[in-house]
Length: 106
Image (cartoon, helix red, strand yellow):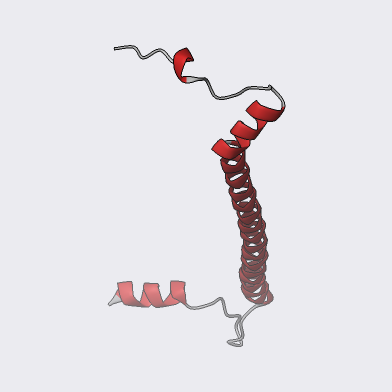
């Protein structure tokens, strides 16, 4: 029974002789509430910064994907047999070999 009374006394806020809660208790409660509020605001600001960072990264990814698509089209154009044949004929003055010039190896 005494343990319960001791527990009640330790859990109960500090009271002065008139039964009121002291200034130190109010200051402690206000400090805890302020700390919780600051933690909430910090977490909200941090979350907003992360959202902006995610948006920047998604935008960057979209630009890189678009650039990759353009490069694939350019590569396909550069590898085109018609383009290579045109360059060989016009710039390098090449022609198809005649039948006698072709040697078949077994």
